[in-house]
Image 1 (cartoon, rainbow, N blue to C red):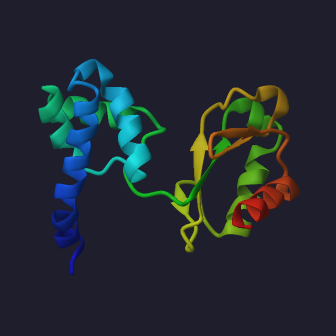
Image 2 (cartoon, rainbow, N blue to C red):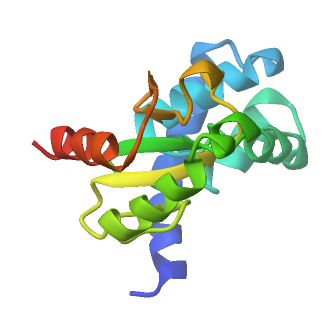
Image 3 (cartoon, rainbow, N blue to C red):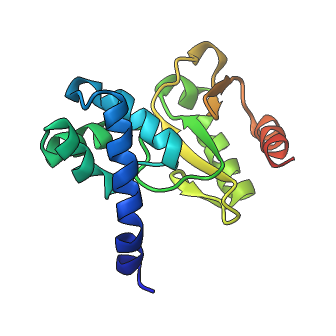
Length: 163
């Protein structure tokens, strides 16, 4: 089965989910961000097939919906790992060792930023300021901030996630 065929098989379910979430918000276009958050919570990501369904339900253009999804970095266009780790790449964190942290992450998890481990457990993403500058370098693990992260602390976090 090709990837194209798979998309066709799954899109009705994804479009139906998108329409159901939009309906919970009364199909109001000003609720688009909340709708996208809820849809991502349900499906784990914002699938391509959901965009036209949302656009139609909310009386928006597909481009408007696509623009919101791609503008905000918290929306995922593809499935992520069971855990998402965001690594701050802003100046304060860089000055405190974020580049070294990223190198150790690549070495220990064998993934680059934006990738998911082969077992599907962890997706590692870049973030551009987590607002935790005083405790840099910082990461966010499943929405929770962790500060003063070095290689040892990162490896401990990963070990806890995998246990």
